[in-house]
Length: 211
Image (cartoon, rainbow, N blue to C red; front, side):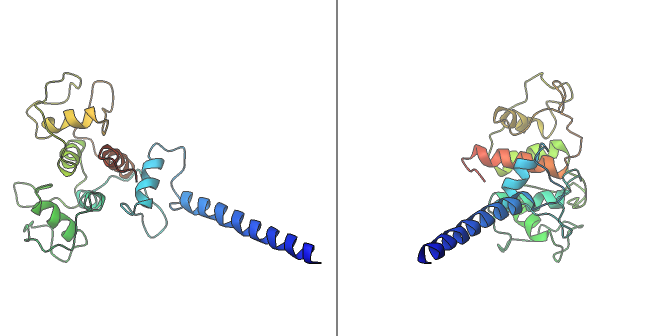
């Protein structure tokens, strides 16, 4: 009888172990119902989600192919580099970013540290889609990647005098970004949420972090 009870207890313990193991795996892979392991951005999205850097939507989706806005990008970067959005900083006075806006504290702290600015007309462009050229400058600033004069002829669509050009060399050397083709960077193309996760994940890894 005692042997039967001991055997039963072991079976129960093993059953609980496997149940917990498999359920944790399922939850780790099932955070977003629109993300699948065969997606290019899957590993990056899952890693940054586990690190509480990026979040999805209330319906359980991440929407990796939605274009990321400048406001969303600001929040992602602040969380990635551990800036405190609760820090008391001066109001950057962007005309399209009221102080009660969801993204205000993230934009304000980035502006205070000189990591992301607005446009010449006084707007931040909070709902504007983030372009790849803007992404390059933002990531390079946020991760202190040294800028160099653009000399490479690799991308025919990169103007050496463009605002983002000095930041590209460092990003390319560290494999944080690549071109959209062997000879094009597509600086004006919009960044989607999955791509932004990839860029951030690679940037995190360059500074010895492995989220």
